[in-house]
Image (cartoon, rainbow, N blue to C red; front, top):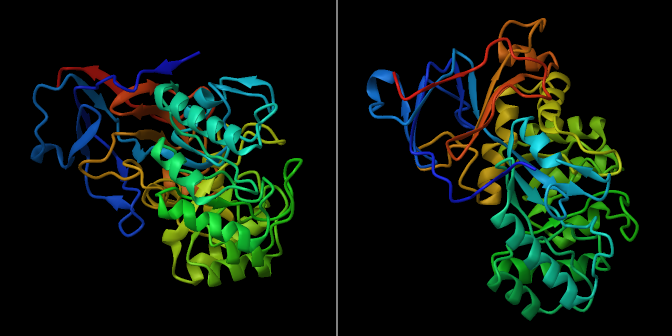
Length: 399
């Protein structure tokens, strides 16, 4: 099982000859730059080669005119322990997803653990254990922000204070436990927010045993920080109710792979019409009954660009910078001080389009040529995407 030590340092890394640099910033999605300089996992310079200090690099990467994009952030996953999911009895799913360009994942609850404890002491213990475990363990180098307790009846404010003090920063999907009424959820969401814990609410029909319908009124009353899988996980609310959520709530609009594709398009278009594209974030909602989708994030980008008619460079921001800002992560954007988490992509071989963004707008999945996390190369040509037309090359220390 591939793993990575969080303490591993990259030293100085220079990425040059970048053909297209996607920023992750929805206000300026494409940067006029061809070089990135990294030191010990953080971006220290972005610009033209002639203007950057590229001397004495430990590692030099020639991008060969391919695209460099912030690593994709899956805003909605359900890990358990390690790189194994009991939901599908599959190992290596996180490492495999890294080959789809994902460098960070955010847990929406460790709900698939067999015998998941639902008593208050047990659910708190599980959340703290998951947070600690994934803080120490990175399958394939992927940063998994885990430890997301499912709230249950009987929890009091002190429970949220205890969780926060122990390092828990997330709530699992509100509605997957016994708390399903809007007024009950709202009180607990407010307690969580008071102590710096971010909340996500289940939206739509039931997904696992014990869950139930969470309709638009409950979502609005609960006022969680993220409207989880607004397009259903799997069963969606009506398009009218989804658009009403986009309009009446100011919270993040999360669109997932394991949901209703038609409603996904409607939600994205509604957010653009409301002039709030910065609220859109993407996830897979896997592992789930439909399986694990290593290319789920790339498929969502291609879906929304091709069928919703949204420029591909903007959709990549939904999967990177938007999520980083909403989730308070130090990645997802190409700017000084951010983590050097990147996916190198190019048009898939024999695509009908010659340029990467054009190919995504046609619905094609890009070819991944390399993934870097904290300035360290975690994979070369992806084993899961179609082969990229061109791939980056590690040159060593010579320029």
